[in-house]
Image: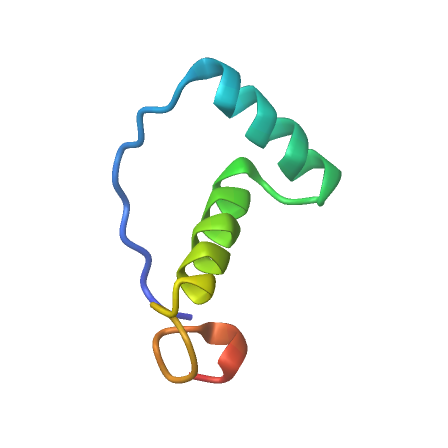
Length: 59
């Protein structure tokens, strides 16, 4: 498993509550949900694709 970079994240309380419920609905931790959403946004933007640190692509 690839190493993970840790950093503090300041986020609006109401947005955190939304993410918390969303994560619960999808059986993820809030951290995993945020990482999932960021990864999907990066893919849609063409910043993450095959061979660019995407563990689901086998790299």
